[in-house]
Length: 67
Image (cartoon, rainbow, N blue to C red; front, side, top):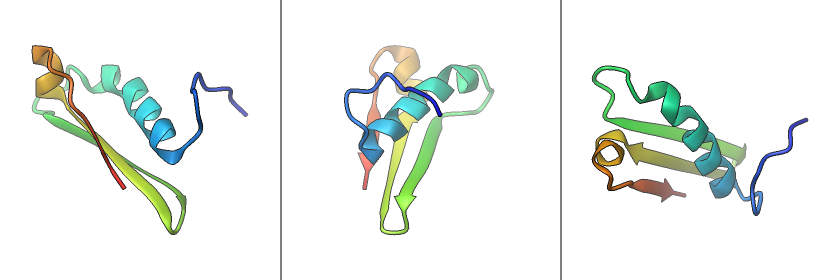
């Protein structure tokens, strides 16, 4: 069990948090432009979040959430 620093525990919030935690590990990998994380709470409840690392590197953060 882990306590996450989240305001709510929607699938979207958890996925965005996990992607934000992974981003520093992926930051310096050569050739990585886009990082995408797919999280499924149940077979009919899933979300995909993605971040454009090129945009983050230039200061215009872009986090996209797709349900």
